[in-house]
Length: 114
Length: 115
Image (tube, rainbow over all chains, first blue to last red; front, top):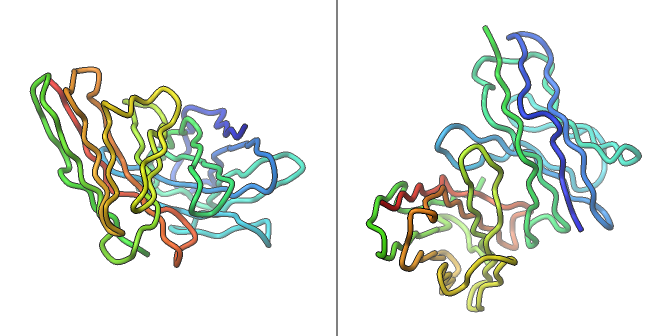
């Protein structure tokens, strides 16, 4: 069975500092991994995905994520946080890139303080 | 990227009534659409997967007679909450994917409040 774990309910970081939002996964076969961001009362916005290839994936708004197969992790990172990055972040895994259901983590609330 | 819309964005209804939520892919043909439900401060839970022209596949624990899903065209899927009750109040989000895109695109969500 597939599963995703986001161990932190909330991450606090000062503006300008680097941020990391953690995600680990469990899936049989090759994983397709995604990060989404959700602002209050809004749907999900796609940030980035890993399907194959380079382990470091670059996405929208300066975010990147590193796929680590040995640690089964896909942590989201940004070198310099902005107050506007404050939102709810979801990691998700799927067995295919578009036709199979996404299994979401429980979400991590990122709070960036000025 | 592709655009997915949902209508309405919010709805308030009385207990016992039915509510229909539309999910449209505006600029691509969505061969597959997904319906998720999100409780306050919780993650998204997949309710069902629908392929155009086929019956929806419901996740375990989701009542198919209560949450009717129709995917009659490549650009439209509907979720009808029948005989809604207060416990059905939630944020419902759809996503859509098509053969020309390698990801799912999410709608903005519909907040349902049942009084």
